[in-house]
Length: 111
Image 1 (cartoon, one colour):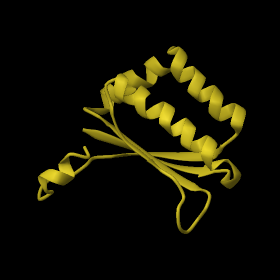
Image 2: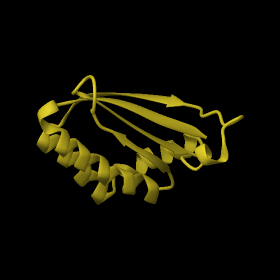
Image 3: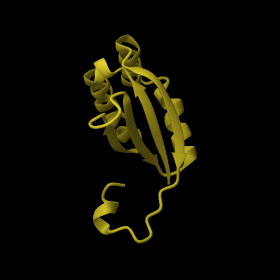
């Protein structure tokens, strides 16, 4: 399994737009074979940082997803929404490998 972890720099005046953008992608990733873990919006502390994470069975499966989204109308609409609203200033994407040993069954429900 590989997890894509994204740190966003967002416009603090456009958090509602960023939240809408995130809600669009949660369903899209899940429909395309991934498991979206959700978005995290600013609450306390920095008001311009957001996060998202989602997993695929392998990096190869993630690459298939990346190729699909470039030709999927709903994905293109989500990209256009972010571009039109300019809610995202920049982002940093990292790939991580989750570790489950010793994790309780309840915690595993999140993956």
